[in-house]
Image (tube, rainbow, N blue to C red; front, side):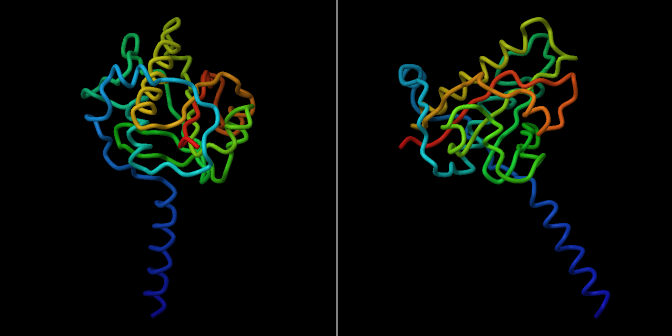
Length: 199
């Protein structure tokens, strides 16, 4: 009986630890509004609703931002294929690192840290904030900024296609983000993006 109880507790704790990470549904890689309609409707909307976004939508947004559309090539350009960006996802539940190969969010910090994700009030109520972080040891000139700009535009277009509010931002307390994520000197947040449902 004692052995059974010990095993039960062990497996319960194991599931709790594993449950910290989030396995995303497969991203939808086709469909949506026609491209030119999405481009026409792309705009910055800085007044998102304080309502959650479903996991499928989040998976689609992250794939568009920095997923793979070929074996080892991202959906956005990367000079010399250095793949120098990382995308962190700030949710009410915690802060996660997006792993495109596993299509999974790995928990980095527990709890609601949206106040660290930006300096604007709307950031604190939006359900999703993306942080684009560059690995400067892989950086090739302005390559990271090109990759980041393309990633942000992809997220804008998916947001327009799905009728979401979206805004890219550079108003970030980089020191606070670095401290929260425990980034070393070679890693720096270069932009952020806020996504939510429209009011």
